[in-house]
Image 1 (tube, rainbow, N blue to C red):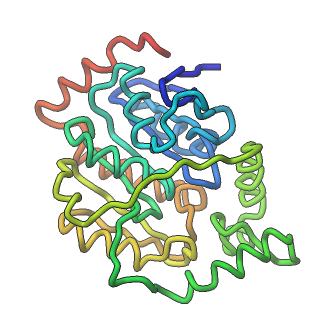
Image 2 (cartoon, helix red, strand yellow):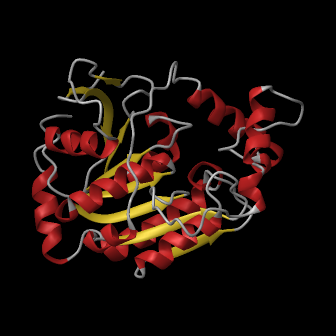
Length: 279
């Protein structure tokens, strides 16, 4: 089982495919297994790296590291250093967006392209405390699911997935159940002024039926960024990558084709994965 023994955590990861490195960061309802539909698609042209965030499935925080304030962005930096990857493309879902946006802000030269799905990345906008009715219903949705009431559904999978693709909904649930005991570590909020440090192209994806991170939150991030590609997917919930994988993959593939790798970046990236010593 490939595990990177880092100073902050022991991180389980998988690497498959060949090409420029593309790292996928899962949300709070998943783990490295969540990206099975993406690695199958992108593996023909990219080196796809998936991992379990510390506190999920096979990855564990190093309780002896003495760094209680360590955040996921710090762990991602250590993982990429371990893999000897100087620059990568990042695809993030929900909680993974907090990881990747923080990392991209702190390490702008190491991110060629950033895809943020169903995530505002922890952007702090004090004047936007309340959003849609979808989000206000989230407490009830979660309570119903925890009690497994008839007709209830996993909030991150969505009611439509349950109704239209019940087997896929069940698979989503089973993947999440691989996380025996989830242990979060803080991410930290992003101030709007920090977004100026980003140097990569950014694509934002939202599902119009998402109660966890409603489209308004994604739109607020897009507006604050000023220069990003925003795509709203109709008839989709929080996990577009899982529920509408074919569409998600095509959109991301097109974006990556336009932004990563290109020009002088391509030579740097090609050198970074030419020696996959840690696979």
